[in-house]
Image (cartoon, rainbow over all chains, first blue to last red):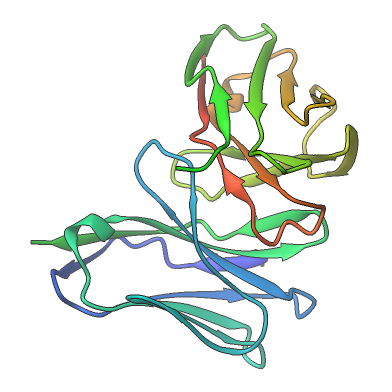
Length: 109
Length: 113
C-alpha cells in the first residue's frame, strides 16, 4: 500500500464549478499536510498547508483534514481555466515529503 | 515565483555518464532537499542537506550524491547514468529541517539516452 494515494484523474470540470480533490494516507504518524499545484514543466507551488484536523480557507481554496479517517481534501470554488494543473497532496514525515501521484485537473471555459 | 533557482533547465546525457545539477536556495533558507519526479508521478525524496550535512535520504542508490555549500546552495550528482534516471529533478528549500513550508525550483529535466 502506498503511503499517500490520490486519484490521478484526469478530472475535467466547466468554469465556475466547485472542484473536490482528495487523498488518503496510511500512516497515522503524519502530522502536516500540504497541497501543491504544478503546471506543466514547472516545479510544484505550495498552495496550502495544514496541521490539525478541520478546515483551512485561503481565497477560493479550502483544505480539509480528517485525521480519524486519514483523508485530506482540497476544494476549489469558482474554478477558472487558470486552475488547470496537476494538484499534488503531500505529507511531511521526518526530513522528507511524501507526495501523492497528483490529480490532473482541466477547467474548461 | 519562488527564490529557488535550478540549472540547467534541460539536459541530455548518455547512459553511463555523470551529471551535476545545481540549486540556489531562497534567501534565508538553510535546508535543501532534492526530489526526482518521473513523468506522471509525484516527486520522490532523494536526500536533504541541512547546514552542509546530509540530513536524511530516501531509497536511492549511492550513485546519487550531493553537496551543500556555505551559502546553502546545493549540487546533486548522479554517476553511471541509467535510462530510468530520466526525470524532472526538483530542488526545494526551507528554513530549518522541519520543512513544513518548502519552496520548489522549476526543476531540471534530465533525459538519458
